[in-house]
Image (cartoon, rainbow, N blue to C red; front, top):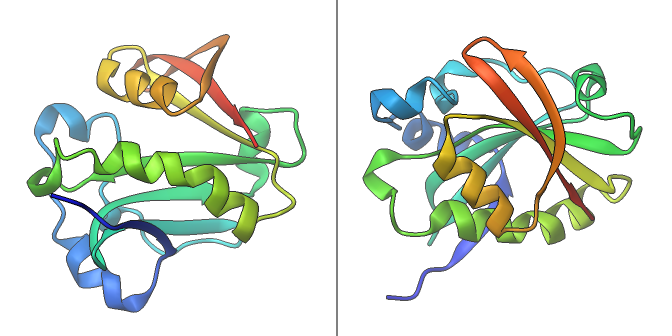
Length: 156
């Protein structure tokens, strides 16, 4: 079955579906569901992973002061809160969405030349996802709320 995966900026038409996302408990401790994010602040961008115009995933891109916690690059953006609705997991949507990330950011945020993120040391599935789509482990480690975090980055 062929999928048509796109990345789009958060829009009101996607909110109802995003608010219905569920995650297994073991995944919930590593990320935030879209309905828990709240209002976006200046410099925060909600990005929806769509399959045939149906929201199947979501993440945030930050161009805020928070990025400085993860990178010295003034043109970096931070990726957080990646989730794929449990009903749609195992279909490759996260990977397809992340493979589109580079071209999406180059088009939508041309000043950005690097995406940074942190991933929990216990979240092996997410680590493998990010490595498989071109992120590199920087070797930097930091202790977060639920243990050690690995810093990763993607050059654009």
